[in-house]
Image (cartoon, rainbow, N blue to C red; front, side, top):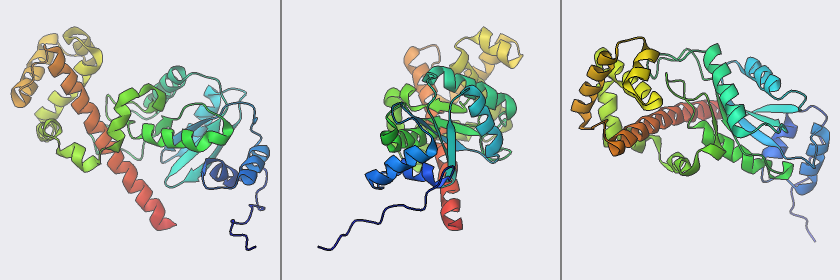
Length: 277
């Protein structure tokens, strides 16, 4: 009988980045995946977590991940414009993401306006821990979480899929549709001027910090200045930021805007990787 199964991968060797590709592919044969686990040095009895890294300079971020996962094996490989990172660290999602965000934001401060970046990222999407043989699922989660990462002033540089909850549904909305939504269109129009952009930055800070005085302290301005800027935003958007529902809508709109901008940038990077291949 003719055997239509693809040939087994016999060209793998210890330390080969292709091992990571095999581990993250859901089309490889079981025997190849088992062999890839053995050759990679991963413990088949322990869960693995996959991270999706987007950056111009990958090396320093990999060194940072290794420092945050002391004594744990870290394996990586470039895949489709991103870098996939596998680790068996037991560090919890919140602790790992907070540490990554703080370190990355300190190392590469955010540009003051979307689109004015000084290079790509660095951003990190973090998948959930699961069996080494379920690594493709963690990789898919990491790529979805990456769409929520951003280099904007108040965006997150590292995002864990497990903390998104229902917000994950936004990853299924095409970026063009997000940017065309009425609330986002209003914010983008407002941000097109220097004064309006400053008002939008203040709105983002207010949605993050939750009070006029805390926002003023973070922006190094008087709280009356914050109030004036937010009043201009309210006049443009018809939001009442003292109302809990309108404040939630404003926060959601800003997140959707970041997802749209990040998704468009990631899609462009993947397209460029495909062209090079």
